[in-house]
Image 1: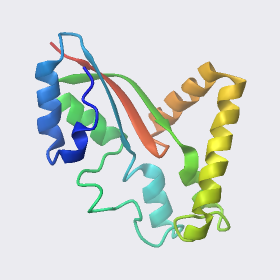
Image 2: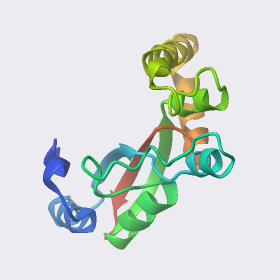
Image 3: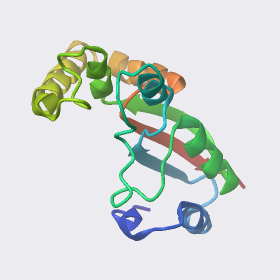
Image 4: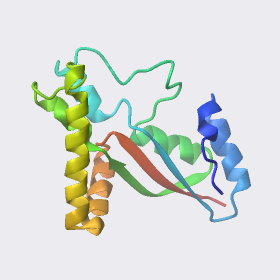
Length: 155
């Protein structure tokens, strides 16, 4: 089952997950990808003055926010077991360097994005398998711009 862009119009993620649970076959799997917001890394940046405000808060674009634990918990509440978890897009690490802190200097955003793509392309060129393992480790840490959870329907 592919729900496509159904999420664009959802105001209650739990209701959507409960509906997905009823539609999936026993043992079915849902792959969920969401922005990683209110992560440890973002909180660290804010608490240590690396960013002056929580730039990830976007009320018109995002009506729900998830970090690693939040996504796992809401899926569990909807009857899903987490079977794999990854994070990707290490772009937020550029905020550690004042010269490339795109949160505070928007003019560096494009170059940080292009550098992030190049970095990830290098990882994939070396070893797609090890890159996925790296994404799993990042998932365990909850570090990365996007969360990708694989959830199995509990029966």
